Length: 91
Image 1 (cartoon, one colour):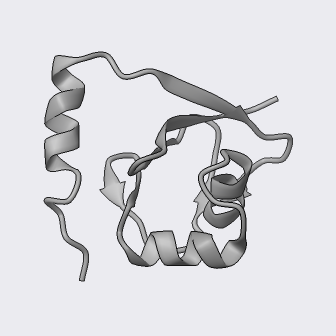
Image 2 (tube, helix red, strand yellow):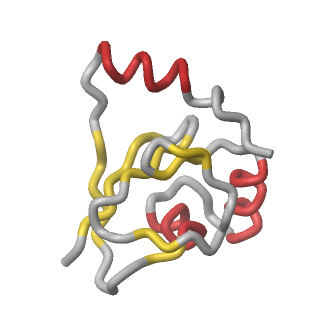
């Protein structure tokens, strides 16, 4: 079961201050979430990505996400606790 209040304080803060969003470019149509976390330098291995997702420390488009294989497309917003906010960008 996902905890919906996990990112609530962060989202409230987001309204008050403009958050710098880093754009991560992908060359394919989509990228899987675990690969994206490595590309964004939030984790260095797939095992670390799995652990991070199990901690419910990742949100995609403001929704908590635990699936490593979640497909991300250009325009998706990924928030990672203690790492930052990222936007998936196409070529």
